[in-house]
Image (cartoon, rainbow, N blue to C red; front, top):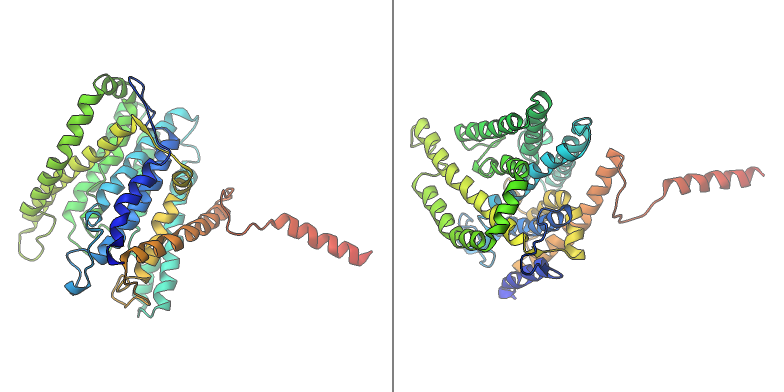
Length: 408
């Protein structure tokens, strides 16, 4: 039973490639179509779930060491690489939408920023209630910090905190700068400014609490830049496709090893024993290595996507609930691990990691659907998936008809 967790390395390729189609010869797939990117994001959401479970089961920092159960080790430090793909698609998508949809910036806050903020605070409230129910002790200040998300009540929400700021950077740049190239440069500069700010902030319990808040952020402007020059990049890459694919895939592992070596030599830590200016310099050197690695990682996937068209009903479904699943599955990761984020003992520890994975997924999917329905109700949008189909209009009409019959 213990070794069954290794089956994920067979299941994941099946999930990704089931129903996939290969473009032969000089034919290429539109690897950046909405359908394909949504399917891929659905797959990545599952990988991020495995990343969070890996950090609870086999990370080197788990104490005592006797709690470590190997199996998902490859996912322990994969989080920032996986999120880099999301950020690339975020940047790519917002730029393409700006240029393809008339008056796109009108109502921009409601379309792009409000749904992300709503997702942040709805899951914050859910985690807050869960923390109370499992017995976490809080004073008034802790309650305020949790409910405002200044201190993360849901430990996985950093992405949905920084994303609205990146969208805001895009809005300000493209609203007030009419020249497209300068607007792209301004957005890029603002994101880089955020990254440099991050390197100046020591590890803490609040916003920008660690390097994962910024070490893949560069992919948002990379996505924008790619979208801007897509019509030049894609034909050039297609012309020398196999050379690009071989070089990028062959160089990925050496780049990852090099990035890890930079991290070991310099790193993001140093508080308490190094001068602050040295810590900042070390972080920026390490950040440069991670930025290159993230960009290379994304480009490898894009190159493979040019020949392989993924997409099956399962990935299509997961692609529609990606944000909600990303945010809510962590609740079950915490409830069934050794301890809930913050130190309180989890109410039930699942011994076997494969069962842990299946339970988190089985509870995470319906919870994500329910959460999405709630968000859509608040935003006035139509829900695609419903756990319970309740037609309020019919209920009202039925009540009116019953009252009329009684009167008659």
